[in-house]
Image (tube, rainbow, N blue to C red; front, side):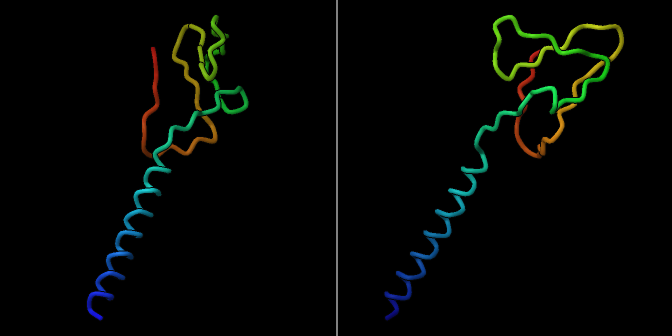
Length: 85
């Protein structure tokens, strides 16, 4: 009887750990951010096209003064954004 209870408890612990690991791994997937003009707010800059037409690449033109592109509709808490200057 005690062995049966221990076995049942071990199975529940293993199942719980498996579910936690799977949930963690699903949350760690790479997600591409859409860089269409509808999802950006540009400040003192214009978007120029990449010569090699690389997908999901944003090139801002050079102008006098500070400028930036603000991503809309992006909920970003933990992770990495690759940026090349």
